[in-house]
Amino acid sequence: MPVIQHKQATVFIAQIDHRSNLSVGTVTGVIWALGQTAVSIAHGYRTMPCQTRVPNQSWQMFLPIEIDGLREAMLLQATAIAVAGPELLLRLCVGNGDAEFIAAGEIRSASGSAFVSSGRLLDAKKDRRIDHADPFLSRGAFRKADKIIAEWNTTQAKVMQVVLDPNIKDIGQAAEYLGWDVKILRNELKLAKFEQIKDMVGLGDFDRAANWEMAT
Image 1: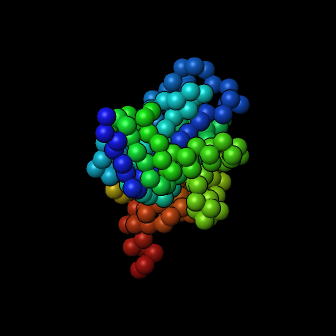
Image 2: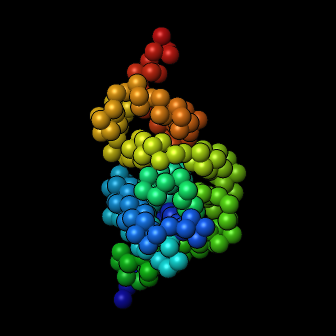
Image 3: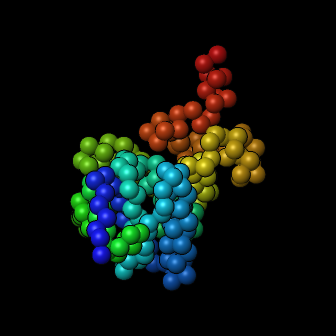
C-alpha cells in the first residue's frame, strides 16, 4: 500500500479532562460537535476533513497545510463550551510539521512530526485550554487567547462559535445567523473580549461599520 506524504501539515489534538465530570452523552455531544466544526474548518481551506475519536475522551484532526491554528483552536473550544458549558475542561494542542499516511484519509494510520509534536504537548501541558508546539506561539498569541477562553460563559462561546466560523464574513452576517440585533451582538463580543484577539485571528475588519465610525 503506497505511503502518502505531506511536507506541511497541521494537527489538532484535544482531550476532555476527567475533572470535567461529564456524562457519557455530553462527551459524545462534544466530540460530535468538534467533528462538525472540523468539516467547516476543512471546507474553509478547500480540503477534505480528516479526523477521528481516539481513546480517553480524545479527538484528533489533520489538515494538509501549515497554519498557526489559533482561530481554529479558539473555534473548536467555543464549539465544545457551547455544548458542555464553561465547566468543561478541554485541552487542545496544535502541532506543525510533516505527516504521512499509509491509508488515504485514515488518520489512525498517520505519523510524522506534526502528530508527534501535538501529542507530546498534550501530554506535557496540563493547565492550558489551547497551546501550540511552537514556543513562540505558545508564549504569545496562544497564551493570551487561553486566558480569554477561560472566561467565556456558554452564551459568549456560542457567539464566538459563529463569529470564528470561516463561513461567516462580517458582523452583519453573524447577527443574522444568530437572529440578533447587531448592537446586542457587539455587546456580547465586548464581554467575550473579541477586541483583544480579533487581529490575531484575522478578523480585524469583522465589524466594518464600527471601524468606519471610529475612523471618521
